[in-house]
Image (cartoon, rainbow, N blue to C red; front, side, top):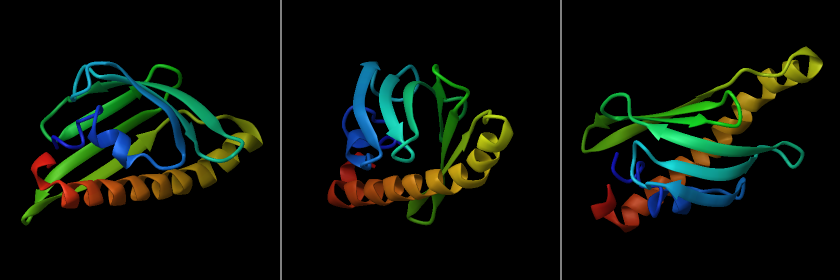
Length: 132
């Protein structure tokens, strides 16, 4: 959980090409952190995110976007000699036909982005086991 909560060093190394303008604005370690980034879910859909981080319970980080209804929850549970990380994002989608496409395709697109981030986290931890 320590590596995942590290918004200054570990998190930037997890970012994919979908993220830009990453900046820690307050804190940097877990709850109380405020971090900014732009997320390009597609070439036409870029979100300007200003996330406030909380840790409502052990093993959980919640990123709440001040610029939208988007909330991302990272949950870490012990598993054998390591840990399992789960990530889930919720938001109030658009209405109409645009909302239909958003509800249909956005979850799969976000899952691909998060899967790549988790692969990068695993690589960071493998290269620097003390960070885990």
